[in-house]
Image 1 (cartoon, helix red, strand yellow):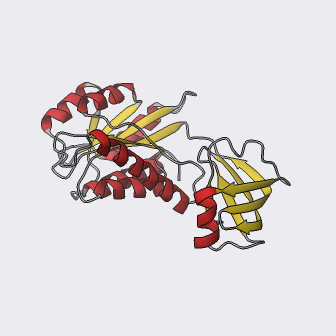
Image 2 (cartoon, helix red, strand yellow):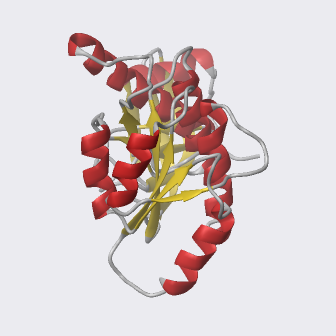
Length: 256
């Protein structure tokens, strides 16, 4: 069974080496000690959310402090082709469910999208709180999945802003029920033609809200370089489509 994972701030593990001691404090230590009830001698992983992970054993516990003797350090590189979920804001926390599941499945970043048909609106103070809630959701999901990387939740965009993101991506795929070509075919075609290349590249997986992506939005995004693709024979919920697409993409790209 894999070790439980707890996060510390990026950079705080940079000088930790096998044989040295690292002290985790704050909320994460409190969770490890009081909720998970980790005790002396138990194995644990500490990750910085940016790819660095130490494995060690618990040496000492306090109510908000966990002292770990490091036995090994691993650094997980980011993939050369990164998967970014563009998730339209949706009601009933379906958007949060989507990003949580996508995080567990390996998404690299998330972009909240204020689409035309999104019922939920991020405005003013609510926007900042909602963004923080999304970041907290992916952080918790990354911990659950024992990941060393926490996906970045990027600033929310409207359709105009998303069009700019599409133009800068290596590939942008709109998951659309009226598309003709299957998602797997689109990804395989791109992957076979783009095996080389050292610079990081991004594939955007675009998911609409409950009411679907409007024809005007599809036209605008496609004019910026996006393509449409059919995810499967059934119409999926907004909370399901993104994670399903991550599974297909991870398989095609050899990430799994």
